[in-house]
Length: 146
Image 1 (cartoon, rainbow, N blue to C red):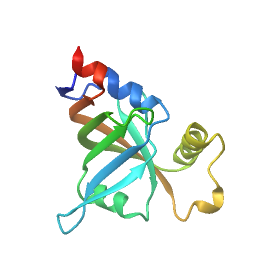
Image 2 (cartoon, one colour):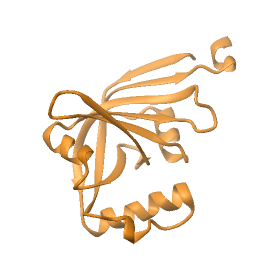
Image 3 (tube, rainbow, N blue to C red):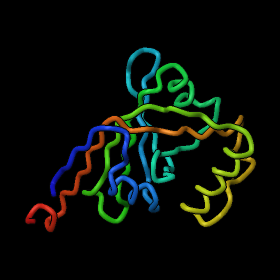
Image 4 (tube, rainbow, N blue to C red):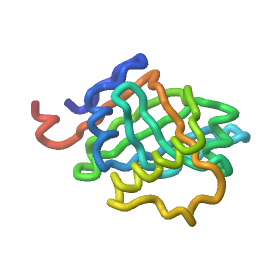
């Protein structure tokens, strides 16, 4: 399997596996100028939607407030030739204690410790993403030969 594309809101099995693992994402949002902005980001899933966590003062949050369309790429950290590109929309934003607890969960997932409270400048916010199109790429030799 070199690449598989799936349209619609249901997450592909490989996307779920990548998001559940200790794999980093890169989120692309649209700046007011129309240019694109991409940031590395921690990612997770509830099995139906993808979720990332940021702060309300950050540009990526301001961008999705204005335009909810995003692309989230999740790279397999053990095999960078295997990744999911998810084009979709931020459909829900969650703030408050739930978002604060969520950043601790993500920090434990990626760094085995809670998120440093002193690193929080404004309010944490969870961004829930529903895909419209997913492309799963696996360019390892074994997948290409199959």
